[in-house]
Image 1 (cartoon, rainbow, N blue to C red):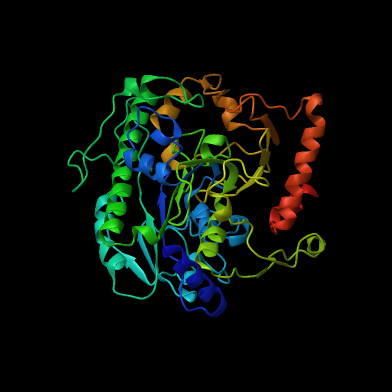
Image 2 (image 1 turned 60 degrees about the horizontal axis):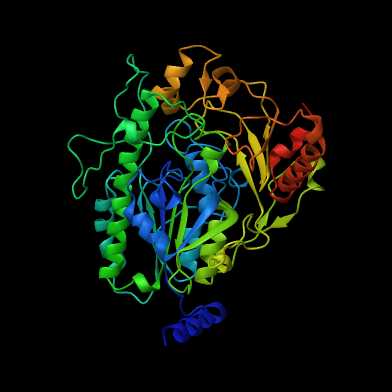
Length: 483
């Protein structure tokens, strides 16, 4: 009977707007890479995420389109790459990047479609008129258990309308700070000695953590990874508590639950870069109406696909946009109108290797205001091309990443010191093009861009990149024809 009613209500909603098929929770962690038990890490403790993966679909090849907080969140909430949203970098403080005012965002589109909407935790986009929620729920963003408790009244509200809850933690984001005089820096991952109400502190020994190949294996990096693990364990408890509340209020069986991070881990070599650890992120989706559970899906998806997916679930039509390129010489090269840049993956949740999901793209311009370093990326299953548009500049550092003990230990030893797969000097000074065989070289250690044997591959990927820029109205398309 449940399936029959859901199909009928979906038809009614699409045709006359009388209802919606279910509630939606989008849980967005902050700087969490694919570090969880369900993603193959046997040390870190994430029982809630592991259970969620058992009940839903775990995407192994999920990618942010930019490893920068505000810019990525604009993509998550619009289905457009950030070069089209205008949210080129951080929203807060003096950075002051804002999105174009004519965008339709996930919360406003869902509200028009009959949903109640609420945001709890980190917001980090602007202007509010574009990313408007009907309700803003308070709660310490480092205490996701408290955030979940504060969301209960919104979840249980007596209403005939379904709800959309946008739940964003600050865990496991790295905090700022000055460069430490000691290589063993203080904990900057929010792990307070006094703890958090309702949170069980889960601590890890540095000697037990797994050091990925893009980081140096040293006592300093192990210490910071142990701190990061603790912050991840804290956010996992928030996932568990929120699901408990959804069950207690009797809405779990009608709720689409999506867990992602805005991008990868906050270590140099990951966050703010377009290398794999910066873009590859967790994505676990539990659809209440799926028949198959515990699916491992290998499609290449990215965060531009989230809004199309959620709106398809809700039965809400997508908006249409004019292109934003004002230069006359480019107008003939770009579509005059376009919809979302991404596409819905709702229909492939129960598949493992679906057709047509074999490439993804990335677009990065700023992080903090002083960090201009535009990069465009095309990635297939075998190859990845990074175009460092401003390659003449040294690669800029976010303030928190510059102060990271793991980076400072290597940096202070000199430019020839190894930092993961490359030297300190090679990390800071990058070529115009980086081409990697990510199938054989997943940590991107060997640049093939100048290899004669890969000349044709390079040419084909450049063409794909330019086609992507035309299709998504990217103003940086002009850089192919001058400078």
